[in-house]
Image (cartoon, rainbow, N blue to C red; front, side):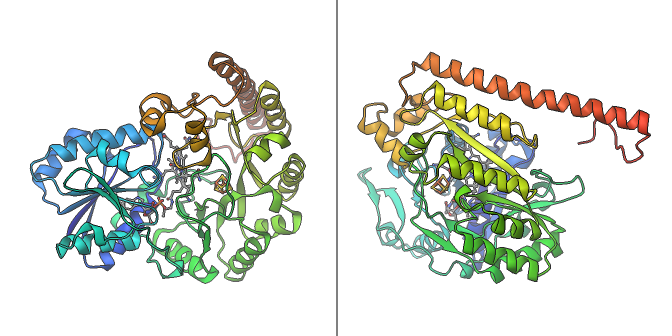
Length: 463
Ligand code: B12
Ligand code: SF4
C-alpha cells in the first residue's frame, strides 16, 4: 500500500529526528509497503501546502505520531482538519504518547480511523494487512477505532516485542539526515554531527507525573546498539549519539555493560543520555566518561525528601547531592531537571531547588524550572481527576494545558497567582545567574584575545 507519514512542524529551528515514525517506516517498508515522508518540520510547509499535496498525490494510508504537548495537540488538530477535508482521504492512523492513553478522545477530535496504542511496529503492519485483505479492524490487536455506531472499540492490547534486537533499524534513508544531524546537544562541537539512538525501551521506575506507554523495560544487546552506531558513523559521519531512551542508566550493571562494550568496540563517539542519581557512583561514572559520555540528563525533580516520596521518585536529597558531585568529579556535565508543583509543594521546596541549581551549576545550559504537568495516563492525571482538579481529558487539552511553562493543574496550597509569582522569582534568579556568567565569560574571551593575542579565537558570533 502507498503510505504517507507526516512529520509535523514543531516550530523549531532544527527538529529532533522523528525516531518513532522512522521505526514505523522501516517496519512497513519491510512488509512491502511504499513509504513517503512529508517533512513539514524541515520545510515549515503550511497546512495549505499539505492540502494541495494530498489532493495531487493519492495515498492509501496516512500516519502521524504525537506526544501530549499542548503545541503538538493543536498542530494535530490543524493537520487533521486538512486530512479530513480532501476528497481522496486516505485511511488515517495516529500513534504515540498523546493518543495512546485516551484513544476515544483523539478519535473523536481528529476523525482518525485508528489509534495505534503503544509500541507500533507489529501493530502497524498488522493493521495495514487487515486493510489490504479487508479484514475487520476488530482482529487487529493494540488499536482503537470507532465502529459504525460511532462507539469506540479498543482491541486487546498487543504483547510487546520480546527481543527488541529483532526490530529493524530506523529507515534513515527516507529522512533528510543532513538536517537532523545538525541537532545541537550539550558539549557538541560545530563540526560534529549528532543522531539519537535508543539503547532500550521503557523504564523500570514509576514516577507519579510520568506516563509510561508500555510496561517495564526491555534492553537491546550492546552488539545490536553498536551495529546501529557504526552505520550512523560510516554512512552519515555521526560522531555524537544522543541516547533518547527514557533512562539509559537503568541499573549500574547495565550501564557498565554498555560502557565496556563501547570501549571494546573502539567506537570513538561522544554521547549523552538520561540518568538516575541513585546509580551515579564514581565507578559507573568514570567508566561512562571513558566510554565517551559528556552529559547526563538527570531527573532531580525536587530537593525535598517528602515530595520525592510523593512523586514515587525512589530518590533522596542525599543521593541527588552525592550523585551530582560524583558526576562533576568525573568531569561529566550534569543536566538538572526540576519541576515544581507536585502534591504538597510550596515556596520552600521551590527555594531549595533554586539554591541547589545555583550551587552546582556548571553553566553548560540555561537552567529553568517548569510546573509539573499531569500528562494523560500518568498517576498524577488520575489523581487530578479523582480529586476534582481536572474534569477529564477534554478539560486537560482544551482548558488547562495551554503552555508547558504555565500551570495546568494546581496541586499546591498556593493560589494560581502565587504559584506563577513564585516561578517567576525562581526563574528570574536562574536567568540572571546564567547571563551574568555568559557576560563575564565573553569579556574574559575578549581579554584573552587582545591581551594574550589568542590565535585560536573564532569570532564573537561563532557558537
Ligand atoms: C525526542 C523526544 C522529544 C523531542 C521530539 C519528539 C519527536 N520528534 O518525536 C522534543 C524535544 C521536541 C520533545 C518535546 C516534548 N516532550 Co518529549 N520526548 C522525546 C523522547 C526522549 C524520545 C521520543 C522517541 O523518539 N521515542 C522512541 C520511539 C521509538 O518511540 P515513540 O515515539 O513512542 O514511537 C513508538 C510508538 O509510540 C508508536 N508510534 C508513535 N507514533 C506513531 C505513529 C504511527 C502512525 C504509528 C502507526 C505508530 C506510532 O510506534 C513507535 C515505535 O514503536 C521521549 C522519551 C522516549 N524514550 O520515548 C520523550 C517524551 C515522548 N516526551 C515527553 C514530553 C512530556 C514532552 C514535552 C511535552 C515536554 C514539555 N513539557 O515541554 C515536549 C513537548 C513540547 C511542546 N512544544 O509541546 C514525554 C511524553 C509524555 C506524554 N504523555 O506525551 C516523554 C515520553 C518523556 C517522558 N517519559 O516523560 N520530546
Ligand atoms: S520520569 Fe524518568 S525515571 Fe521516572 S518513570 Fe518516567 S522515565 Fe522513568
